[in-house]
Length: 342
Image 1 (cartoon, rainbow, N blue to C red):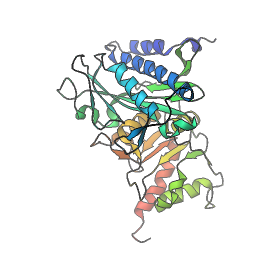
Image 2 (cartoon, helix red, strand yellow):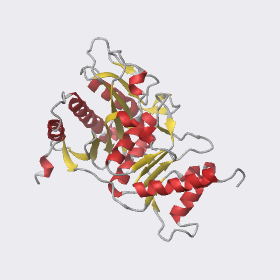
Image 3 (tube, rainbow, N blue to C red):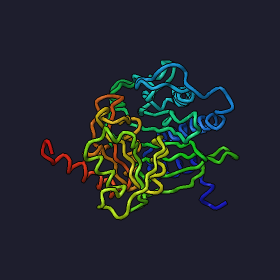
């Protein structure tokens, strides 16, 4: 093994903490508990076909989606990993309508944790890569047990963000604002090992775009022109992009972060605000991509600068290599400048 391969996530978190003498260790502990949660979820994901854990539980979440058994399991694992620690004032899950309060019998802390317990869960039964997304915010209310205001903060206020992808291997990627770092789980020793230090999104990066083209008929004219340009179908692009779309944001963004490219989920006639959740999906990924040298917007403004108004707010997203996001903006802005009826 190389010297790099024996850097565990525990050691890396500790080394990063030493760069900040004023640190209390609370944020480091949050990352450690998230790594533990990921190991437990990965264990169940990897044996999902062998036990009665696939399929739906027979109810819908706040977004009207069928809750999968693994969704519920992952949600409970993360909550149980943190509820007793005294690190958090409250939590908010994509699966829950309101905030998840810390039980009265446990102490509270100065951070709020937001998470999507199992992104891409519609792919669970097909054994497609899925993931967990998380975001850490500093408490700002006077209530020791937190309020919605502690969770409804703009992305620029995030203290840390990351994701775990459960695929051919399990990887945890996170940032605290000091680089983006990836760790691969070695199942033989049960440890996350540093495998991707200081990730930078390639520039210009691979010419890959990722979008659900099944929505093409509902897109705006500008969005349609953008995709035709990327394909080389309009005759203006002599180096067409390839298309890759998994349908699991974590998986699509993980590839984009490592290879470069452009991921999009625009608004359309049916869903003008898009489909993805600003607080649980877009903002954490935007923080990661920005710190890796990329860009993330809603087609008009940087995602991290949007002032959210609700826990489950939706947002369009254009994210990836900065030059490709800028390219997408040119098509959107041209459309906005067109006279009505053009």
